[in-house]
Length: 270
Image 1 (tube, rainbow, N blue to C red):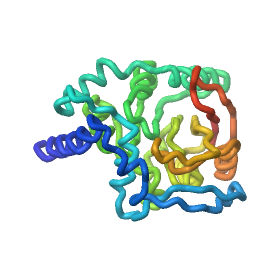
Image 2 (image 1 turned 90 degrees about the vertical axis):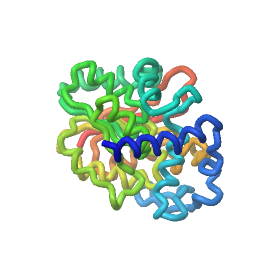
Image 3 (image 1 turned 135 degrees about the vertical axis):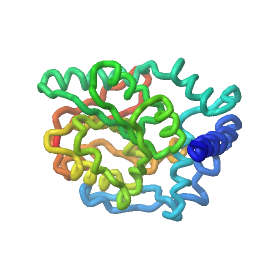
Image 4 (image 1 turned 45 degrees about the vertical axis):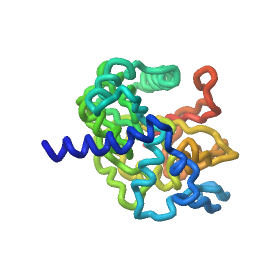
């Protein structure tokens, strides 16, 4: 227990100073940590300008880039327990963008007669959606995130969450997707250098009949590293990735909340 507590304290302290003073430029400008390459993507039969970590052994650089867009630690958060308490009291209510996705997914599940016993979310950051579905009758919910602080906070709140780096496709273990009925992936794929390869691995590890609800921003002028984005999705890219991996596309939408970015959202089935 002492060891676990030390990890929590170290993770909290390592991010607090940057959060409070907004000292994220060393990760967001990418000058010494990332390299921009033009890559041929076979499933698109086209090239994309993609950011990669310069040193693939420095996974922490990637985690810190994503942490810069994650949980906000304020001056009054004196430790991780105070942070968790604040999130539980003030940050678990679903927001406008969540409501659009929740409403769409519920209608699609009902119209197609899908039963959801186990739901998982990639890149949950704050477990708002995990909390929503757990509170609304889903038997088991679980989440994955690359930022260790997000995982520690989620675990302290009682959620079944794990640290997974979806950007490290070779080392990524997705065997626990075999019991998942629905996988949520909202604004995660653009944070990966090769989302096409991650989608293939997700497909290979899901059970037959399982669903994925996935949304990405459309950024043909990207990728926007200041938002932690490594891959610039053009219109139709995600559809090609999904179909190339053999997913069946059930629905497509560009609907977002008022003032939201240009997006594409799909429900697909293995």
